[in-house]
Image: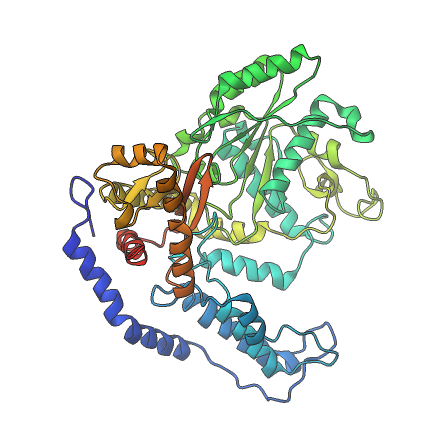
Length: 525
């Protein structure tokens, strides 16, 4: 449903859309349920069939159980759980949920029918993070191809540390990481990289690499340092203040060795000026790390890549495909420009894993190109497979179209709420898909944005009242289960909502529906 030239919503059309949602919800939800049920063949399990104690699947003992579980997951978690006609969650208070679900672990085996009931209960009372209206965190969506890759990963259960135990995964990881390095802008995809259990761990690896790069002797002795941060303007690092900090540190006889910048901050979605920071790092012989866990997906888009201009000058990059690219959790990477640093900083030369006299080329275990002896972990889930399967299915052009659609949705939402008096923007002209705003109920509305900002700045009582609005709306949306959007403070600002868009399955009608839902939930406050 397009907006007019001024970005305003056609009220009649948007109300019609909302009315249609309400009037047809029960009928279409029932139809959806019947359609899904017909799509799967459900095997009735004997009620007295007990779980077996052997940790090995048996066609006789487990095939019917597997099929029933998979059918339920597809029907209730995947298709119903991502339908606009169903709730994002069925919220219960903790004491109620403890009574509804059987969490107790017993001495004797459970029956398969009891396990099926537990499976259904877990799905029923869990947040459906793949739902179109779950826009609460920096992850969302259920990518169909990523889901298959995730299932295959769990079915094979590989641990990605040597070619011996995970030959396909080892080669797959290097292929994906090399392509990601190429997208960053490093010639021919040269460099190094690893998959990590989360962006914070990837950032920790980057610090370790930078420290080893400048102080290799630190690996075998205790080192205590201090981390400093630069002040921010709308979430961005200030290069001038950073230089002041570096100069002060040098004057004190210290040796600053790393700048950690961000491309897509968690709350605001801000991008640091990477090129200016790269100039400072080059001048002072420092390592530049870019935490692009959230914003890294924009690198794939020709339209939005400029947000990370200069990233090819970084020494290391964190990039989480499970965020903006919506790979299943978790899928995090660290990319390093310098080939040997990861292994030099972290290798332990574990003889029980990395034998030198294997019958194949052991560079696939410990060579600089491959991923074996570069981690502080030993056992490591093969997070690459789901992302590789997604990328294989959609191609780079498909991933680019996904990114462009997500940014388009965010801009459409932003342009529409700007025109409405009940919404006030926290950060003008957002860079990423984070849209931060206050919902202002009628009792607190001003005649203009200027009057609102003046009231916010100078009236403590008004600010406190506005601060209480977001938690009340969040409570209503959670208890009703209609959507999930997070809120937080920032610096001295009162609570505001942060809408994060990352599902390309949403369209303009969804944007209008989300706006109308805020208006409905905010009535009477």
